[in-house]
Length: 355
Image (cartoon, rainbow, N blue to C red):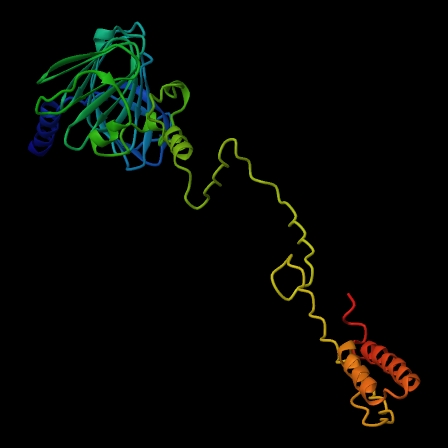
């Protein structure tokens, strides 16, 4: 009897002192896109998996998750990110009284839902992003450096160093946990050097693509890698395919012309166009000397033949002297000497003395 009484007392004690059942975590949204690896409190997430309040969501080095909250707010979580749904107070009117998330590191895109702007708050290591019914991208580096780029609406960033307003599309501000904060300015590609990585803001650079309402078009803000590559190709052509240099203006390349025919030059042993010197006439052959006529019989010491008048005169005087007694004979000798003289003169010069 006492045994059964002990068992009953023990069972009653367990019932009285056991804790009340734990209430299940409140669902605040669901996953609409999962790429590579995204994990939640219960392990890897899949599409349509619920997201709960206070749940910590992490992505792998190439992971991407897109989430939709109950009031229509959209949140994209890019590569290497860690974020916690910190507070979520729903008021049953398709809006929330409070939605706060804590972004520890990584890349994100936020698009506000149907709730009042004052209901949203994003906490980062460098400060707080106040939402004014807007869309923006933000990046949290490993050291807590935070950059915010406005896409539409308006936003405000407040840190230890003060607050900056973002009012125009592509406005940007960068803040550090130590309180340093830049003035609001338009974002450009130097932001990657400032943040120390080309993988920052991947939804603007195009290294990670979003779908649905999160894929806002026309909001690259000049950070698109494709646009940068195109500009680089236009300004710096590849060295392996150099373009030919254009011909100088007003100086078109001369057409190929046939070589002019070489002028006919007279054959000449010397310089061209110099006529051959006249060949020297061969010296005239010496005229054949006429055969000496037979000496006539010299009558009475008749001298040498008479070639010229002088000699002829001498002969004549000689004949006259020696033959006074025979004038007829002397005249005969004179006529004969003249005939001989004329004949000898013509044959001696051969006509060369007559020009």
